[in-house]
Image 1 (cartoon, rainbow, N blue to C red):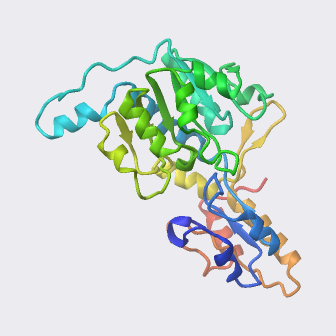
Image 2 (image 1 turned 180 degrees about the vertical axis):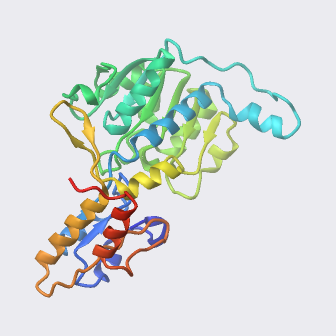
Length: 319
């Protein structure tokens, strides 16, 4: 499913789903677009695809980080208006800056790998320190939440949206940060209080920000649009051919014994879902899996026909 087409899978929508529906497969990492509790109450299983978006989202974070350090929006806009560099002022280099990664999951660790060649020092905060080296590839220091806010030159947010992270960064938190801090958010817009962010930008507390997500998407706070020292993107961090392909063809990463990850083709995963669904259905009503991306549905073909087609074209490998 994709919330871009249906809107949020909330209690009202789920209440209108047919009893035959047993699984919702979300084509993305975060699943805050789905009321998982309401699905559980209906006996509907929910799956997502973490791992497939790590590289693309981390690449976007690096782009926003560098753009914010240079306040790249100012000269880029001036150039298109025939004013050459405009009133750009001087930006900052990343070398030697302390990057605070808020959330060292798959995307946070992918960001750390990409940030290392820029000679950024790194620290991170998680609910718990990460144990496996693959989740902390640069040996970043684990610190408390408030220490990360107080000491980081750049803060990049990579948290899921939950009740505990909603509005996590507000006026109080901005007040703890260094003067001239840079904020990057490629996670979820509702983690940051945008009104507080605009105030911090206008007051100079925040030097610049790089944002791909917003509190009330697709609406963007007017103050962010007017603020020249913000690099804005319209939630397109995973909008690449390769990532969208991975979202369809790969299931979440599975860890090998040596700490590396392997990706199992999602068609194998969907096959397993279909088989499980058949087992749960007394009437064997599930005979296909609806695998849709941006409205392109394959639900009119039986699952076995779909899988066989992909197998012939090298897209499905048995494990």
